[in-house]
Length: 80
Image (cartoon, rainbow, N blue to C red):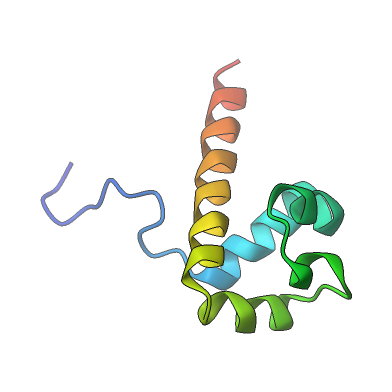
């Protein structure tokens, strides 16, 4: 691994990309169950969710955590 490469799986991944991948993987209903915030439950959209997540650090941290979980699950599934 080169010195400039990051081991952080979130390095270079935008919040919008994370959210799109989570919605594709889980769907809005399941996302709202896993992270119970109104923007995922009531008339959800990428734009409104991004607006909320960008100004709410605790919610963004939950999205980043779930994204990391999803990546680990995908990696485990690929090994099987």
